[in-house]
Length: 292
Image (cartoon, rainbow, N blue to C red; front, side, top):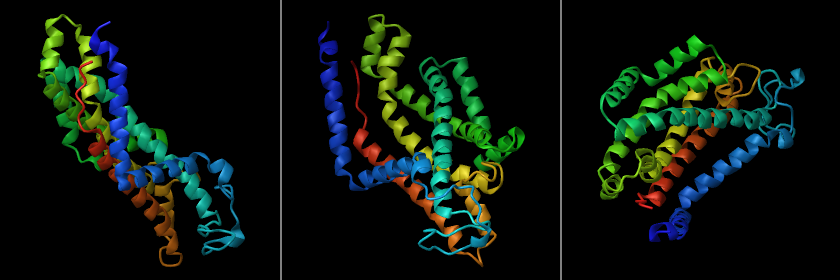
């Protein structure tokens, strides 16, 4: 057992302690993380805590203002807005996590190979990224969603394609910088297989900027999903979605104006929390060089 291997667990524990110490000092980051944790708990615990069925209609209570019975009021067909907001949060979170996760799943191996191996494959991958980025993001998402058909799954695929070039370029750029480091050259000189170098050296050292970028991109994903649902290409009625609720409430902006602010504020707060969390992660993670 080498010295580097023997002390690897201690180094890992020290890095974790450093991260949590830095992160805990960032009050805005802690508040943002707490909000997102609470939102996730509410979204996935909605069947247990929601006061009403989100699809239940009460025609005698159409467009009621907030009251003790309905804390956020009711919509145009008498459904409880608070319950629909809780269930709609699940859709937004799933769309954000799934689209970013799918995009990373595709971009990570392609970016690693493109940046480390280079050559003709790098040229092909980068030209693909250039081609995708020539199209406006929202137009591309709308086109893919229209071709595949409306629905959360297809909207998620469309967003994953839109985010793919950003992750590809980030990963490739980070790999190009890391592959020239001294410890990478040392690993090559002693005959370490390329796959092991990428997995144990390169991947660990590009993780920090990837995590930060993923948090930022989730905010864009939430906004994009809301836009697609607003335009009728995301979640379909009667399923609740913040974007769909925004579109429905817009019709009654003059007669039930409070309705449009509820999903709008929720979207704004969640995107803000994701961006604040990304800043906190960037400051807390830094760039820890891992050679063991």
